[in-house]
Length: 115
Image (cartoon, rainbow, N blue to C red; front, side, top):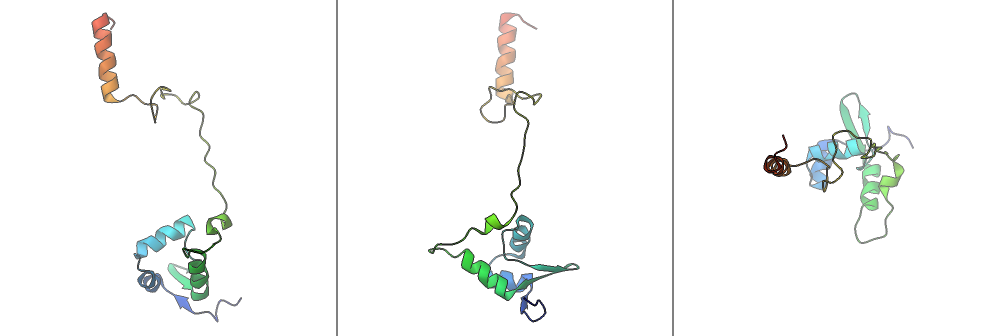
């Protein structure tokens, strides 16, 4: 496929066509979820044929291919809670004690006479 013979769209033109903001297109580019694009220096261009194929792939109501499978998957590896310092396993989400829990703990210590 020759790139020079194609028709190109600017982010402003594509945003107007899709009814989204230009920053939405920038977010899609950073997440690699929007249509394919070409960057020349600071300028961004969208090939019209790629925009059309992307629109077909995300069209609702039909069987579609998942365009997210085309990009490499990122894996996030965190140390287990046992290895992470400062994390209390008993807390419901983050493992940290809330201010309320700390106050209750302090009152319990004061009542028990523990400093």
